[in-house]
Image (cartoon, chains in turn brown, cyan):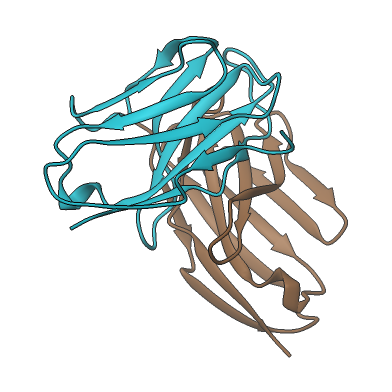
Length: 111
Length: 116
């Protein structure tokens, strides 16, 4: 089955700096890569996703890049704000919404 | 409803007991998913319903776990003879995307199960 690894497990940045979270996947047939944000005690919420026919996608301060050859994808958050503090999960899918999640990155944005 | 609703939000039970966890998806969403999230981990897929039928139950850990969705809306996850290792947050999600299509999963707040 699919295996997704995520790094780092914790990330601390100063407000206004950029944050980068990286994930690798094992199955080259995976074709859908969403990112979910989960605040403490809350539900995961989709923040951005990318499909395998696209190399990069951007939505305001958030961008995701995908390298199919290397089987890795990354989340980039620019101009970080305190409200960006949360756990971020990457995920991969071979088709449909049966997602394999990474282990999460605890992002802390410090004032 | 406005979002995915799950009950109970918290359930404490003793080892060996039977539990039921309920999920009410977003109205009109045909696809419903159950995931399990252990402390410090990402959600782990359990089962997926398309309408009333379980389209993929490959994530259910063993035959103590069972889920139903008799009318294609509300779903119940049932766990028999609970074990301490079953302790986790059980997340339900729904999607308007049918079949093998991908799209946003809308998660509920989860049911936190603690087996003593």
